[in-house]
Length: 150
Image 1 (cartoon, rainbow, N blue to C red):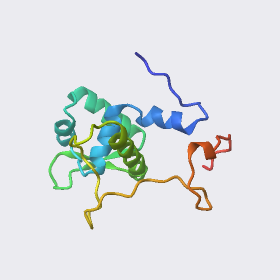
Image 2: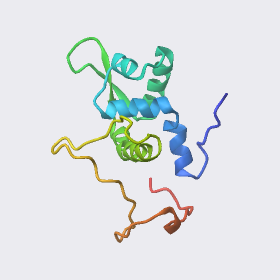
Image 3: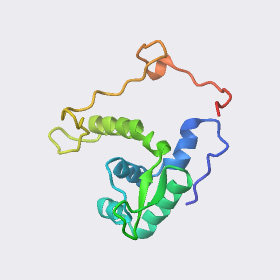
């Protein structure tokens, strides 16, 4: 099934999903956030077919989420490294993880959890706040069309 492009849509959520909306892309970004860099590392971690992995990596590179660099060990291999744009997906992965821990696991079921490297503590839950610091829910917001800042 061919996906419909969201390129001309005014909604930033729709446009974001156009770039990173399939599960393989987000899992590649997750693994890159955790330090994986090589094709073989991604393939081993994800168990995805090589042709699908190649396609998703090309897509993420084309959209500036990852960049290809020579291997850091000096070998002939190449590595996929998150760009600043890709690194900025970290809070989205944290939010997805929070939601998944709350809604996708049975009590007592083993799951992974992000922890602060310095202290070994779980992360504080993400919060959405107004510019003045008030905690917001979806009922406290509205969508408006505004000109792009770029």
